Image (cartoon, rainbow, N blue to C red; front, side, top):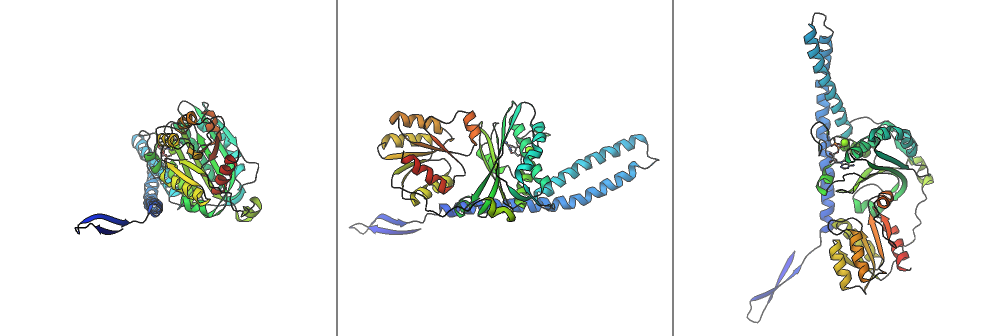
Length: 410
Ligand code: ADP
Ligand code: MG
């Protein structure tokens, strides 16, 4: 930051002329790096402890079994040793969970169709979630060849289903979807994750309690739990994280309190099938324009990204950080704004409510929603208004620009 004083006639400093550099993006990248370094460090620590602990447990279990088999040992003592062994067994289960998180477990990958794995565990998953929760699977007809350890991916699905059940004590809907998606450079950079290329995607959505921002930031930490003592170990999500990392994939979470949760798991396509399975995107320049677009998004990272994509294609962009600001802005400059691009779920005034206020000003206002939830959840909650459209997060730049142009040309 540089400051230059400007003097008045008496030679006194009257103004300061300043130059500042916008470091928002750098700060955001730093934060992401920090988060992944933190997970790495926790993983190493947990792995180290688990490894040593395993050896100690072997000693306890070893001598325990010798003692139990000792003929001269009175019955009462035998029972007590058995209690010790039971506890040690539980501890062994915990350490093996910790090892899974810290990626010290060996994986045995084989090439297989991700859809097959899901079909295989579907029955088991419905047993986990119980009768009150409905399970819906929507699998893409496309083959999703990935190099994975089947048992580990099943473990991921089981952990996610268990959490979904806990989040829906009164019942609800659990949706599992699969799809193929090409991660491009822009997406990888914007999210600070992944290597560009074709990925198989599993989306798992529940209609449960959801979580706030604070909880969401911590769910992958080992031993982080919001459940009462005895109910949660806080290891489920850290195991999911560890397994997916080990498969060179990544996990995204979308959630709002009271509105349910969607996890998206990205696994790279198998080398052999990658190119055959997913045609590379033709490098046509996405369509642009010069109209004014109002972007409404509460998450600063995303707001910046959307602004960059749209202004990069020539559009004028107005920004609002919530529904109320958007509604006010629209009322003040209605004639100018050709399209409203709006997050569906925001704190305070929701997208739907803001849309109603905007449509009171101009009934023909064009509104394009973005949301991290799956279509199922949105339809079941009646969040989509007549004449509005929806793009799924993470929004891909090319798709966004195509949809925007299409709506503007209507
Ligand atoms: P545990 O289930 O033992 O608490 P996890 O690592 O599986 O540990 O999850 C950590 C925390 O993440 C949970 O306590 C809960 O607060 C939150 N969480 C995970 N999945 C969901 C979900 N589907 N809905 C709401 N909260 C969830
Ligand atoms: Mg859990």
